[in-house]
Image (cartoon, rainbow, N blue to C red; front, side, top):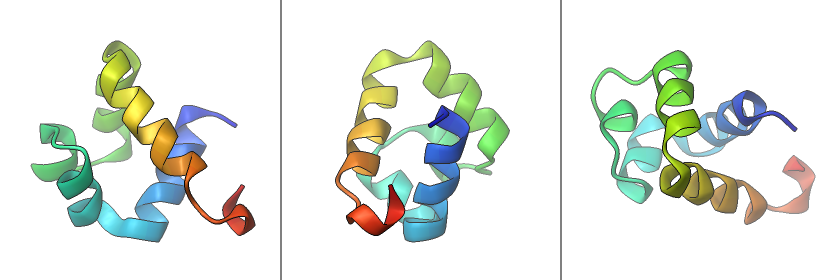
Length: 63
């Protein structure tokens, strides 16, 4: 599963506002997009881990 697919599923499940509340990073809160978020997450291990952990906590129907 790619980081892009993980992020797309999380956006579909929670939406940008909830992602921004759970992981307080600007690319989720100010003019969010998949592209800007991927750029940041690929360079920031702590944020990527939070996103991956959120994905792993989704019900199994999403995995």
